[in-house]
Image (cartoon, rainbow, N blue to C red; front, side, top):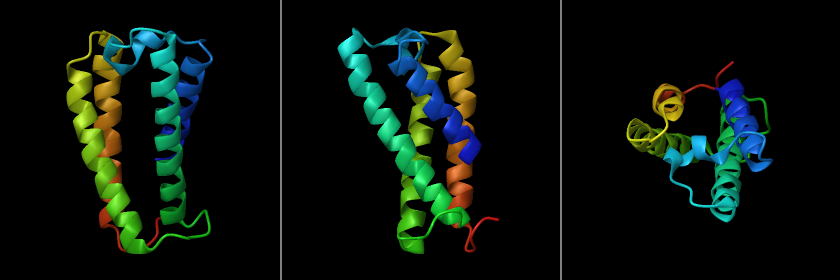
Length: 122
């Protein structure tokens, strides 16, 4: 999951740097560069937060959050990724429709799987 999140963060950084066109993300519904900056910065913050939580769950970072709080965060992300999957299915761009749907479905499943594990992931 960490590798996927790092790849997603890199993808959004490339959009932010305008190396990848922003019209292939966010369902192709961003109207201008200002909207892209706002959405990409929020996305980077959220994905970085999730990566930090996953690293704590894995024991790769000092755990500063309680086990219960980490479980709640992972369940919330599982729900968000599930909703994002529905949004990807309605995307205007076929790349986002296909790859985004598969990716967010996988991330939803991984978040839920991590949330229900009692022990840290090795």
